[in-house]
Image 1 (cartoon, one colour):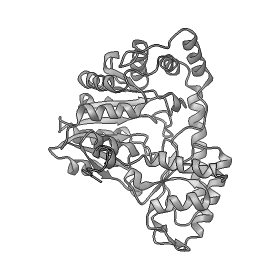
Image 2: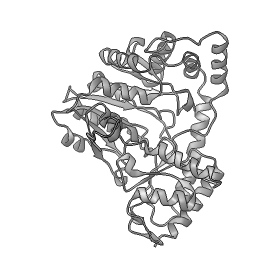
Image 3: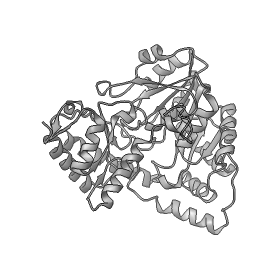
Image 4: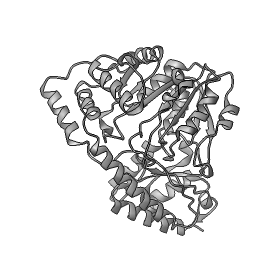
Length: 402
C-alpha cells in the first residue's frame, strides 16, 4: 500500500501497526455485545478503582476552579511533587525544570522518540517489549532493533547481547522494569552490567520505563538513572495509571537531562499542550499521600500471580516462569503450534489468541505483538473468580487441539 496514489492516507499510517492489546480488547467487546460471556485478560488495566482520596482531590480541584489551560510541561506544583518523589523513592535528582508531565506515559515516550530520533537512527528494544515501543520508534522515522530474550533467561537481555547490537547508528535503548509483558524485574547488578556497556557510547539515550514500579514482588526497585556511569544518558519515564489505578486520567511524566526535557516540552507544545488541570491537582495528592492503597493492590496482584502460576502449570504444553512484577504472565505456547481443531491449524500465537477468543471466549494477546511470537500475554488484573474460570476455559480449549 506504500506510495499508493489512489489512497488519501499517508504512508505513515498505512505502515503503522494497530495496537494489538487495544485490538484484542475491542474484539472481546464485540463478542460480548453479541451476548457471549467473554473474560478479557488482554488489557493492561488494574481492576481497582482509583483510591478515594485521589478522587476527592480531583473534585476539590474542580470546585476550586482548576479547569483552565496548564503549562505545557505541567504545573509547577506537580513537577515539584514529582521531583520530591524521584528523590524520596528512587534516589534520583531531577529538578522541576527537568520534568515534563504528559497525557500518559505513552506520550512521554512518543515525545522522546520525536525529540531524539532521526530517519536512519536505530533504537534498541529489549524484547519482549511493550507493543507501542516499535510503532513509536517507526513513527519517528527510525528503525527499531529487537534484542530478544527468552523464557529460559527470564526474559532478560544480557550485556553481551547488547554490546553486539550497538552500531554507529544506535541512538536509543528502550526497556521497562518491571516489564510489560513479562513481569521480569532487572536487579541493580543486572542494570549496572548493562550500564557498563552503554556508558561507552555517549550518543545513546536510555529510556527507562518504570510505570510498573509499585507493582514489584521482589522487594526493591532500582532506577537505571541512579547508576552514575549513565546518569546523564538516562531518561526516567513513569506515570499514575498502574500504581494508582488511574488509567483513564491519562497522566504520565518523565525526568531527564535539561536539554531533553526542554525538547520534549517543545514537541508536546505542538501536539497536545499541557495535561488537564484538575487531574494534575489530584496527582499531587497521589504522590504525597500514604501509599497504603497501592501496597494493598500490589499484594492482591501477588496473590493472584501465585494462583495463576499454579493453575497454568496444570495445563500440559504451557511453559511458565515466575514474573517478579507487573500483572502479567507470559507463557511459552509454542508446543501448540502445528496442532489443529477441525480445519483450524494453529500456526502461531496470533492464531492461538484468536482461537481462544472464539472457542473459549477468553481474550489474551499474542506474543508477536511484543516481539516474542512463541508466547502469549495473560493479564491477571481481574477477579480471582474470573481468573479461575478463564484458565479452566483455556485448558479445555488447548486440550481440544490435536
